[in-house]
Image 1 (cartoon, chains in turn yellow, cyan, brown, green):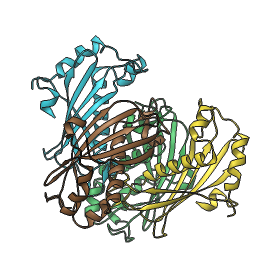
Image 2: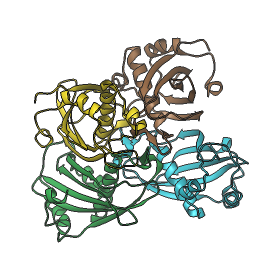
Image 3: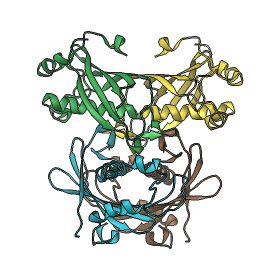
Length: 144
Length: 144
Length: 144
Length: 144
């Protein structure tokens, strides 16, 4: 693993929890979306700008491995890096850790690059250049 | 209260619950939307048909009174009736009861009638006629 | 209106939006919960601390007035103040404004003060003292 | 593929959709939970009964492949079968198809069998016997 990682923090709310005091298994995907949104903003163009330029990144595949439970009011550290970067596809890996350093979730999401009308298109070269520093040596398969 | 009531059932999932084993306070609004959707379908034109005919019913106001907690796996009875029916506005009252007959929620939602572009327009006369049998004598204020 | 207001910011995600590019009407209640959570944290004791001390604040009533739509990627300003403060009840008013200054939502939530076992109890005096500066002169009825 | 499949239907609501008129990628996991809940009910013991008997099935891994978008008001057919059944683990495969027969989602979830206190325990023999007819010959890897 050589590339940079993007980091985002998230405070767990009641809305995200279910019985037994842990985040409901689907809500982690909401947190990953929030993190990717902040990542694109940090790169300089929020996803909204790309959408206005007729480029969106629909999710085509997700893989989640739940290691331990996130609890109400936990302050989570969410790490994101690029695991896949080819002509028309973009993959992210994510790792969520709680304040005590316990690893809670490993997850990967694979995205197509399409027009708003969902026609496949090349990843914009300008974006590829910005994503490269976050590209890990390890592949998506290895990391989750 | 003279009018008919529409009835819909909903089984509570983990996704809807939070700590302490009860439905999260916002999720009741999801159930009310589901119920209104089934109500319009039962009247003959699903909301999707109205939307395709350039008529939508955005919520402009909600009022919820929580009386007791809905629990995981409860089978809820959701009653709906029309509390308001004027030229450009439509109000619903809802009452949720659990399998043991306990009253859990009283709620009212007030909707505007607009085009998809959100311009106010008259409630379609055809819809008004179908809604009338569900119009209660009591006002929204009295019922929730 | 004389009291202080607590302010919290929230960035709108895809997860919170629905058709027509606006926040789904129930999700605003998630944002209000997030804001109250940060408010209690700012007062010195997060809600989790109160819960561990056997004091919780279940919502007994909500009132929401939707004025305009929050859009994807909007950065929302959420204001909160105390509208009600009596022996066993606590009311908050909230106002959501977008980056352009448009008022999107006015909402009030009324909470009971109970044990975790949901027995009514007095609001802790220590909390009442911290809440008082945020108490508005206007009543809940006037503000939403 | 030799085993039986369990089938459940779900009507898509506004609450589940996001921009661009399709179900938000995380909400499919809510639908899969709903389907598993109805599957256990159909087997004779709802998940709540197992929980009361100190047996729960926390998700340890999910894999989702999005093939096409579910739209508002679609009536979805959700198929479920057992892909994994060993001493302490239970795997499900799910397939979501819309009314026009288009395949929208393939997903697998892997669950541990634990006490409510999250200690691993053997799958109850009574449950194993009921699950066996739904066990596919194909493995989880092959099906999603």
